[in-house]
Amino acid sequence: MCATLSAHSALLRKLEQVANIEKDIVGHQMTLGEQQKTLKELQFTHCQNRTLLESTIRGILQSLQEEVAL
Image (cartoon, rainbow, N blue to C red; front, side):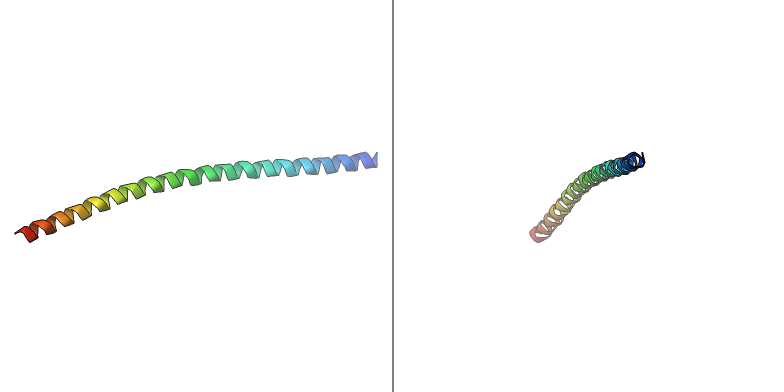
């Protein structure tokens, strides 16, 4: 009987370890999802900044060309 209790205890410990691993996996998946969302937001912001920079440079070049033409 003692051996059976010991085996059950060992089995319970293993099941707890599996449950903890599953919790870790779910936590990592959530973290990965958050990181992917942040990456998409950063990519969008980068595109906006790039567009703004290009527009600003075009405006500066146009102003310089107009000054040179005068």
